Image (cartoon, rainbow, N blue to C red; front, side):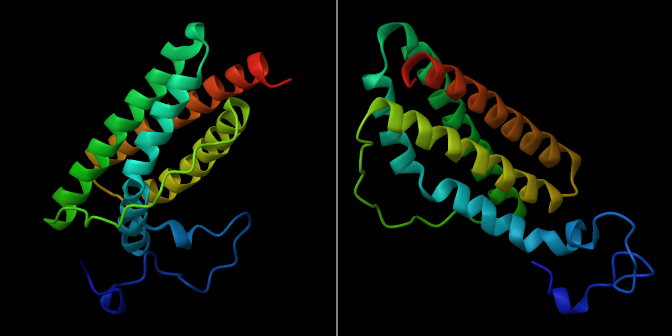
Length: 166
């Protein structure tokens, strides 16, 4: 990892720029890279709890909804592998294991749907920040696949919420 104190400014007028819209300097990959690595670790750190949650939701889903929840779970497994691969290729290290926490199942299927929906929305924001920190196009493409899946999952959870939680 590069020492950020030796980095050159991302563009000539940085940081003395008056922005007409929203300041973009914080999204320059060289400055966002360390945060991207931290967010990748954060994204996979709750892997075991996520697996238990999705298995629980599949078991609670009505028969005609099990395939929807299972498809989300399977995508999440794929994302986990992709993020681990990116991290390994960037750092040469595996993501360190985290201590396991006790799984607390939601009180109801509807509460689980709500938690999942807001979890997906938070994940989109996290993956957007990861995307800002990566310059290599294949990694950016992988993160784009992940966050578009998360948007798709949000729509599926909204659909399940509309069916079950009125």
